[in-house]
Length: 190
Image 1: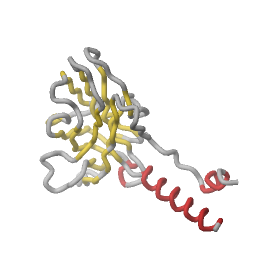
Image 2: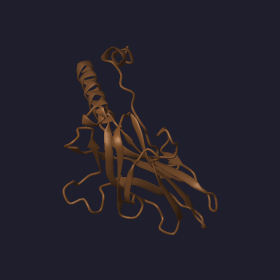
Image 3: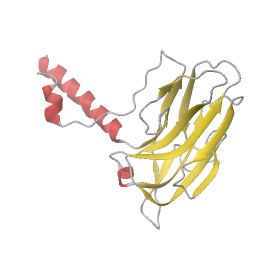
Image 4: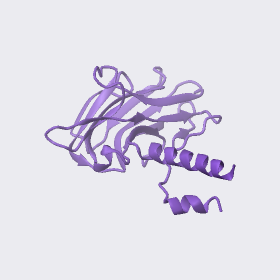
């Protein structure tokens, strides 16, 4: 029985480590990507940061661009969208349909800022879930994506989309899982 429990725990930890290493585009309430749940009140501007979290897949080597959309914003909110100052091209709008953003060179991870979005609501703000999804006009990729640093090809890599929660204390989010060695994991069960 004990070996079954240890085997199950090892399997879960292995799967969690695999998920934690995959690249994704996330929504955050801190510019460094360290907070994914926030609180906002009417008439007070709040800021959402969208960034690529590059992990243990092909994205770990860096990226040159991204394509995605942000859902969950109330269309009645006053919105200001600012692309990363490091970008040399930003097409579309992440809040209304989707966007493409490109950089003149390879942007290394593990965190690459993509957009800063400021919102102001004139009325009470209920719970909202922000979510990163595929660009509305992406016919070939059913997911958010980044372009890799493999010029002149610029391979597109399908990646996950993150969530962030606004004014919703019942929802808890996790930003990242630190990779651990097997020795560290075993020591937790001694």
